[in-house]
Amino acid sequence: MKIIKYGLLLFSTIICGTAAVKAEESRDFKIAKNLEILFNLYREINTNYVDEVDPEIIMLNSAEGMLKDLDPYTEFLSEDDLEDFEILTTGKYGGIGALIRKDGEWVEITQPYRGFPADKAGLKAGDQIVAIDGEDMRGAESGTVSSLMKGEPGTTFTLTVKKFDSGEVQDLRIKREIVTIPGVPYYGMIEDSIGYINHESFSEDCSTEIRNAFNDLKQQGMTSLIIDLRNNGGGIMQEAVKIVSMFVPKGSEVVSIRGKAQEMEASSKTTTEPLDTDIKIGVLINRGSASASEIVAGALQDMDRAVIIGQRSFGKGLVQSPRPLGYNAFVKITTAKYYIPSGRCVQAIDYSHVNEDGSVGYIPDSLIREFHTLNGRKVYDGGGIMPDVKVPVENISIFTINLYTQGYLEEFALEYIRDRGFTPVDEENFRLSDEDYRRFIDFMKDREVRIESETKYVLETLRNTAEKEKYDERIKEYLDKIEVEVSKEKEAELLEFKDEISRIIEDNIILYYYYSEGVVRHKLTYDPTVLKAVDILNDSAEYRDILTNRDTDRK
Image (cartoon, rainbow, N blue to C red; front, top):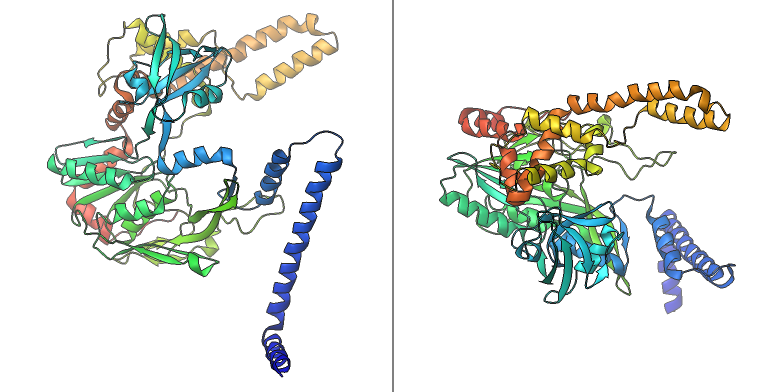
């Protein structure tokens, strides 16, 4: 009788949802079938392939193939990747606290972090790393050197360096510490009443850094605040909620998340009393502001609590969750999308619909919807956060980027420092003179710049072809003349992009003496987005008008 009742119940269920059940059965069967095929493929390769194969390499390649058509934030993390993942989320690691780069045969220090072991040991930009615990580092890659210098906090090692300032080779005994990469590398007063907080990452407990900076600035007389989120790629979502909670009433919804699984649906509201609900705030964003940065900027915009200034943000409205896979392996998987108070999602790229060529596109204008802020201003989804006040983007030329990546700008900066006898410059007012820049042009004369020039490519092809066809000696003179003319392109580019090249050289010189904080202070004197924010915060009528009357342009 029980069997008959169960059969009737099952039949009833099937009648009510046959299509759904069949679809689910089909999906479950496909999963089981393909898992079996994958296992058998793995076994056959491991057992029968003609050469020895590494099972872990096969696994990594399989995981990469499995995830490649999903969004770029869904990643397989092996045990070896966990250290980098932990640094990204916590901002902490065991080491000496310095940035390094490869320069010729040697790796050298480019930036010691103030107050950490490298700085305490007197390391400066330009110091060459000769050996680590007696092991010669000539020819070693930056990653190798970095791994050897990292380690358990409290352990010590011997670092042999060739000092840039004296040329002397020194053995330094250095104790590793927990190095904390600050979420707020700098804050200070721009004018008598305007405070500035530079926020670079949403790492663990960065909201406490913001809170401490705010309270300190308040004591210095701050009545308006600039929060700089430019090039902040995000991080921990709850840190964004805590930061917004400092400026809006307790109980305000900051962000909600919605995913396929019901347990992924949640709403995050402020749970603490705010620090200040009246202070004027300008939030700076650009194309590099993403994820948690967009939650802060978007929530404050939706609640009409801050004026957003700069360029459109990146548009990442996807939430990732780490899931354990066993043996210290994880998958960081996109499980939901987040929505800010107006109800909009800022996700700009539609990863769910892949084109035939494998590319993905931005969400089309026809699917972008209109929403409203607390004061009724129009805002839009599907394209990041649109600033209330746009400031034209200052693009850096490919030529300047090539100079930077080839190390020439840092190299000249160090030469400039040495020629001055290591006398510090004025961090706020320092500028390269025309004479200094002429020296840089002379410095670049014998240095090749990788310029993506069609003419250079054709010339090189012609030389190679002429050599193969035995014409090279007959036309060498003509080709040499063409090359001389083409080489003049370099000096023309150096003159055309003088301003942006000079800025980067200045930053490197200031960095040597005043660390990253000095570079930020220097930039504040000429940064057009900061200057625009200062103008708006100094004009209460304009600030109020932006938050009550103007529509936010989505384009």
